[in-house]
Image (cartoon, rainbow, N blue to C red; front, side, top):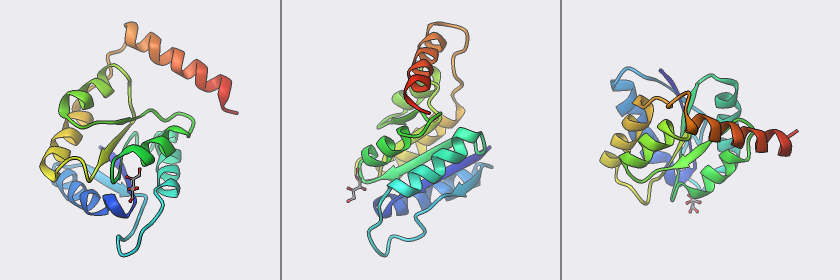
Length: 151
Ligand code: RB5
């Protein structure tokens, strides 16, 4: 699967680690920046670039990383079509896909270690959305809110 990755400086090292981990598992990683952690960078433009691609469907899923996962997930969620979820364990990652149809996983590089982050990413990427039930109806409600509030 093609997977979009983005981070600020704080998430850069974890992004590199996950890129290698996911590539070794056969995924194709597309990096939307930052290109370095040599100086501090805002997570906002990288979150926006990734979100535009994911909202257009290519890549279909993304992973964004900052220090906590919070700022970059908030920035991603300001883009139409994006449902970004901060996850700190595998259960949250599975539920984010199964119940919320999240299309962006947000990780905090200062919150989770590299091994746990890899397990969270694996869970997120392998779990399908549970179609046809109450969760689909709720995601449809969220999309209605989005249609009302976004041009
Ligand atoms: C950078 O120091 C840090 O504020 C940023 O990576 C992120 O955690 C913000 O939400």
